[in-house]
Length: 291
Image 1: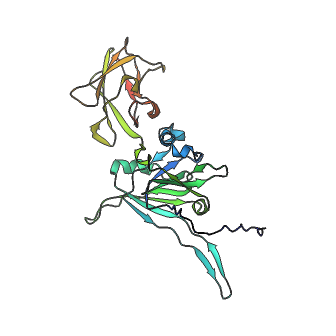
Image 2 (image 1 turned 180 degrees about the horizontal axis):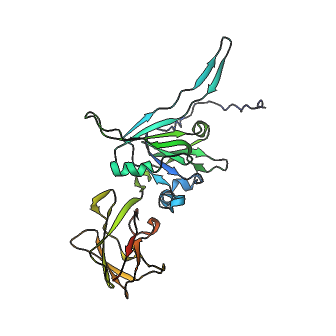
Image 3 (image 1 turned 30 degrees about the vertical axis):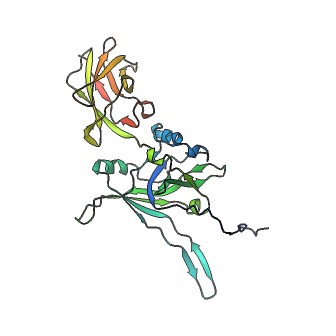
């Protein structure tokens, strides 16, 4: 029987399974309550659904790391004449360097804080998390996530957004760590891209013209939308019927034609989970004033 406050020792025979986390290349930040069963974690759809969930329950796949620094603290020992005592095992801390532009940097700063959880993704396309008491897998609790100030190039290295993150409890990896083999799908996961809508010209009771483009890259139009992707409502919140045609000369320009007559209201895109082209979401809602 194990002594109080101790654990039974496990055997250490040679094994051919030496699965370990590799160099980190990305991460998925989730709300505290998000988890998957081991079987669910092997299905890409479950991860993609989490990335396109409603905002309150959404997971976020971050841009791939260009560099990663392990800035973990070392174990601390209290060394005396007659004994050595482990004072602290130290913390897992990392600083990811991401070169994704100023717009993306500003988006990443909105995620700074603590309390969420993080799945780590390594270069072997493994998703690394921690095991719950019920056997499910969830991300590691974040002690802190902070998008630091931009590190501007000095001419010898690139410009980066440094993202510093700390795992709250090292035992979630060292004692409860789990690895999901995601090499068949992890590179296919899509993070939501913000889209900006702009009215072109004047609105009439029969037509309106809208440009759709990637918010962080105004030169990139969003093409391929269909009528059902546009959510057109009256001021009272009722749906307005319409048909849609995309311009053959201006990519990302759409003409909406009224099923009957347009009235004052709003127009945006449907939620990302419902849009016909993955994975986009409107960053704004347009006010429609019909003369």
